[in-house]
Structure formats: structure tokens, C-alpha cells
Amino acid sequence: MSPAGSSFTDRLLGRVRLGGLLSLAAPVLAIVFAGLITSIVLLVTGGPPLETLGVMVDYGVQPRTMVLTLNYATTYYLSALAVAVGFRMNLFNIGVDGQYRLAALIAAAVGGAAVLPGPLNTVLVIVVAMLVGAGWASIAGLLKVRRGVSEVISTIMLNAIATALGAWLLNTDRLAVEVAGSNNIGTKPIPEAARVPGLEIIPGTGTKVFGLILLAVAMGVLYHVLLNRTRFGFDLRATGRSESAAVASGVNVRKMVLIAMIMSGAMAGLIGMPQLLGASYSYSLDFPTGLGFTGIAIALLGRNHPVGIALGALLWGFLDASSNILQLHDISPEIVAIMQGTIVLSVIVAYELVHRYQISAGQRRVSKELAGKTPAQPEGASA
Image (cartoon, rainbow, N blue to C red; front, top):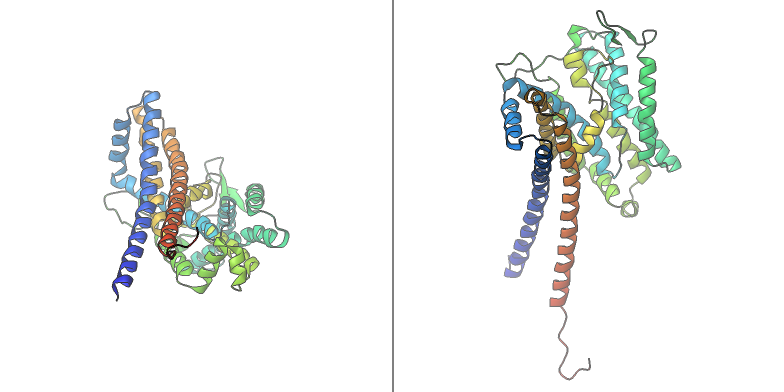
């Protein structure tokens, strides 16, 4: 390789490393800033910041809490992946929350009916959940490609409709039955043969990690391969970057929008499966809610990258699991929600600053290169 070529390669590698360091520094600085804001809030309210952090860490590293953190992170990870599929297409699927709850309800009813025996019933429950989630998300996709309706508006409305529809279906006269010994109602329990056993990843606890944590890992790998190693993934990302450029290269943008929404909904259908098949075994009034909105925060924190999302899900899981101990020390557990919100806002601001810096640095670099290639004027030439 010529010295000029070697120099160009070195400069290119240096820019790539700098961009990677800036992208890594952004969430780290955001978390540090969120910790600073939380410390100020604690001081104002009379709470000791260092002691609070120490209590959370001591409680968070206990085996039972670590299991709880992994279980939280499993559902958070699936939720963030569902949101990230839309983000990569420049689609804001706010309807993940309604999609996973409606999918979990109908899948639980199908599983409780025991249409198929044993593990086949497990597969049926998962497939039904994905189909329901995909079908519900496709409504927003069709409205966007056929009528130009913003997916933000349509998915918000569909969340409300899914909530009302779920409440109507979760009735003793329809899909649900009364839970013995309580005022709760839920679907018929899924037979024991169709349940997914937990994994004893961390010994010495009375609880186990959701067995479907393996499904979450598989979905993360599939997400990465599909979006970064296939032509379909390239077309999807290209459409998200620039619809006009995608059209010029022969991509059917309307088709890609619809497929992306369907994929996001199918992934959303999996969010409730670890809880349904690994803990509650039925869908009832106390089934976890709000996981779709948590996924939005974690997808932003992880920049839609499967590894970054995994780290964000673990952080969120740790914060939620550790908050359980704060009340015993006369510290409001809402301080965790403040920290989480501050992290999201800080990350958004940090990424925007990094993005602007990279654009500015690129413009300066191009200007220098163009200035260096400007031919010198001959002596005596007029200005």
C-alpha cells in the first residue's frame, strides 16, 4: 500500500474510533448526569445520596434480587426490541403496550383451552401471541400506507381501543373465570405440561430466571442478523434514513413500512410470554402493564443496538428491583422513576449533541480537504 493510501486508512480508522468513543461516552455521561440530578433531589428532600446508592447496590447484588433483575430485563429487552424495529424504519410504534397486552390475553385464553397437548400448546401460545400482536400493529401500518395517517396518532388510539377490548374480553361471561379466594378474574390456567420451567442460573435462591430468557437472546440475535446481514434489513434501514433515496434504488417504501409495523407487532406479542408461561400461567387483572412504554426508553438508551438494549434492560431491571428496599430505609422509591426519566432525557440530549458534533466535524474536514486541493493561481493573475 502506498504511503498516501496508508495515511488515508489511518485517518479513516481514527474517525471510526472517535465516533465509536463518542457514541459510547454519550450514555455514560447521561447516566452520570442523571445520578447527579438524583443526588440533588435527594439532598433537597433530606435523603443521603451516597447511602441511598449503597443501599440499592447492596440489595441489588443479592442472589434473589439478581434473579428479579434478570426477569425484569427479559421482558424489558423484548419490549425494547419491538420498539427498535420501528425506530430503525423511522417509525414510532407507541402501540407496543396495547399490542402485547391484547396478545397476551388472547394467547392465554388459547393456552388455557388446551387445544394441543404439552409443548405443542406452548408453541401455539407463542405463535398466537405473535399473530395477534402483528395483526393489531398492521392496522396502524395500513392506515399509514393507505391514508397517510401518522403511526404515532393511530397507535395511541389503538392502545386505548386494546385496553377497552381487553377489559370487555376479560369478563367471566367471555374468556375469563373467577380466581378462587379473591376478587380477581383471569383466563383459565395454562396446563402444567405447557408451562416453561425456570432456569436456576443463580443458585441459592428460591426463585428461578424465566426460561424464556433464551427466547429473548434468540430474538436479539435474529434482530441483529436480519437488520444488518440481509438485503431486507438494508432496504429497511435505507428507507428509514431516506425514503427518496430508497425509492430511487427500487425499494417499495409502502411495503417496507407495512412489513416493519407487522414485525414490530409480532415482536411485541412476545413481551408477555415470559410472565405468562413462566410465572402467572394466566392473564388476569394484575398482569404487568406499561412494558411497552418502558421499551421506548430502553431502545433510546441502547440506540437500537441489541447489545446496547441488553445493557439498558439490565440497568432498568436493576433499578426497579433495587427500589423495593428503599421504603425500609425511609427513602421514597419514586426517586428511581426520577432517575430513569432523567437518564432518558439526558441520553436524548447527549446523542443529539454528539450527532451535531459529528456533522460539524465532517463539514470542517471536507472544507480542509477542498482547501488543500485548490490549485494555486499563476503569478500576475488577476484576483
